[in-house]
Length: 220
Image 1: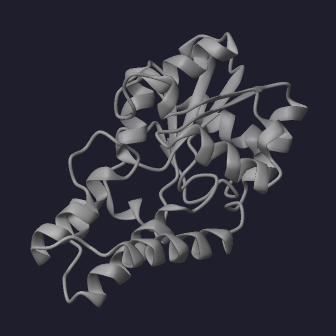
Image 2: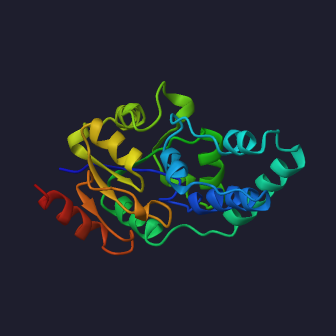
């Protein structure tokens, strides 16, 4: 029996992935450099991979980026993120979970300040019973620490919960924690391999939560 659902945040509840990528892409293009997508996607859903866009560009240019360039990049990122709404189907699935008496958690490789701030701004922070972010564990995704921490917080076993993720690192983390996982790719992760997931959907609006649970539990 499923007793809990654990959500990723970036790219799953709110599309922060595209604005973050676009804000760096604009910086690279302004300096006549290419931002290699195959390197960029290594860091999607994780903070443990070595690629760092600022350091990479500075190495290519042979000089540090001015503070005003970095500040403008952050302003541009914020502008694009604030223009985003909660991704389709998220609020409806949260409503249905509450009606079904399911516990809700968030497991994110971002900081707690980032996740809580955006969830509060979007008016859905109080929907979740537990949040665990990279500040709370030793290892972020793709290690299972975040999911194990959320399961412990919610008081449920891995077999009694499932994760909803958008990236290969996130899927790997959930599976390593012993959970079933639904993958919903976004504009950045749609080109990546999400085949480790138990179920892949195009959007959380694709099925009701009851239909989703039926499909997930029917998966061998």
